[in-house]
Length: 318
Image (cartoon, rainbow, N blue to C red):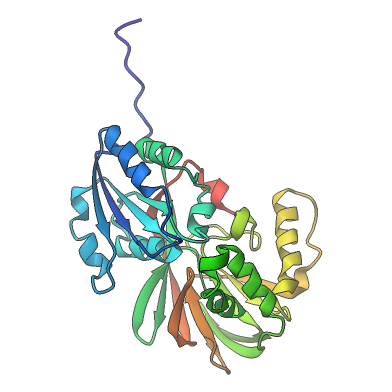
């Protein structure tokens, strides 16, 4: 039948005409499907420009001409993705979190596929969701994060995994967690939206996205589009004791009953939080370790990023 036209796409679906790919060659093991992904986009008629991250070149320079592109692809680990998302915050340019790192938790939270053909098709379809970002400030220096920032046991786990990642990949995080059998406890001092409080525990996580590996929910009711963080206070004696909390979160997500292990952690909501500790603790944001330790301040940046994904907003909540 002739004379028919295709119905228009949804209003938030951009057409992939010019695509900027910024990639970190040191992420993961360097064996991602990025070359095939770029080839497929070009075969589909997109103009693709590739730029490699460099230690001495600020990301802002890599994307200084962003207004000449329709889509930005951040190819690397979570640190690369969140840093680029923060750099282009509030620009409205759709961002693909291309999974080229070790854990790729942001891509997992967005329920992205892992193969080049599926990712290329996703870019060409162009469906986006708008989510919040986090901004972390330590010693006057500001950085961005998409998933979570934390001080204490989770940062120590990431630090311990660094020399294991090349050999064990994502299992490095599990092996490092198993070493944290007796993490230090301390008294944390919090200022939560202007209100002060203290608690004794092994760490604090400030979460925007809420899923760990294999899309296991860290805890319930984490929504990256609600304009606030979910702050997780870790009271358990070691990280392995938090496994029951993951089970609780799955039970809640699948409507299987009330929590059974609620004593290991506490959650609260905040738009801005300052975390200090009597004993200085290491700090991480989206897997990136900071030389500085506590105190730090995290604040929410509502609706600051547009991520490309086929998932609906409710599908990236826990």
